[in-house]
Image 1: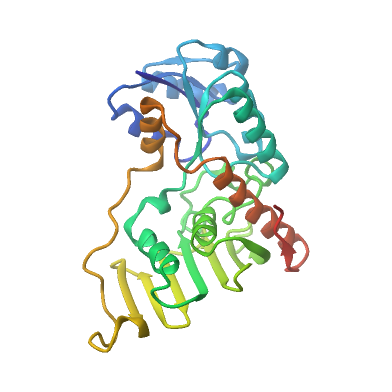
Image 2: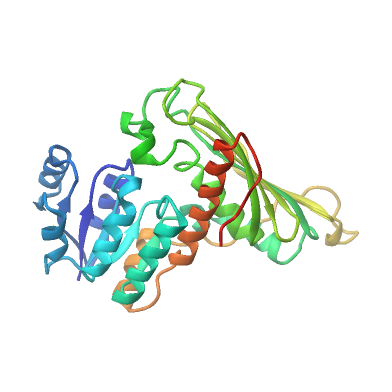
Length: 331
């Protein structure tokens, strides 16, 4: 039995994670901590578990083996170092931390404690992006020269995101650091090592953080990624486009279609095709983390993945503060 502590209900995905955990065999939610007791106490009552208002006492409980971190982003570093030092395995909502330096401190605490760390990268488990990764790795469209990824919704313009998602201190930013994490980590996964970033953000609704954002990333192999995200886009489907020296891949749109064209497919295949078989979907990241802990193996989406995402975000926000200047990637 894996016993889990829910470390804050701040993030909008916290309740979803709790629901997923309660659906899994051999998993039990043992307690809730929240930096705001008036939010955490009723949630603990809903879950039928203890509420603990003190973080140190929460982490010292011997009926907690691991924690799910959904605290404000600016507290991630603090709570994850404390969790690791208390010997608790860690699953965290993205981003890992606000700076690469903070990520390195978490990594050192995790290494010293010998605990497992995993970050939520759900887009890497779905068939369409996994197929795009294969297309790039196997050079099915030649060398990739450009990648465009868009993940957007209308949380700000339609008013359904909670107000604290516009707190520049707690969040460390707006649409890019939250929803934009998905296209960011997909770009890094598909194209490899990035070299520099330039970014343009604005606040269409006038909130205190960006709600509409684009970043351009250059990679070691000279490919370029266009990363788009928004809290002010209604009915905006997922898009992933790969363009190469020998063809193109288009993923997404209203029906989430996959379309491929390549000069390398031979003369018998003309025009665009829709592959009949895509890679199978993998379990969601939190389930993979739980299964890894129960089976005694390494969890996916680990420290290196989390640090790489933060490196991209840190550079993107530095570029925004410098009026779109190109900023080198740290590490």
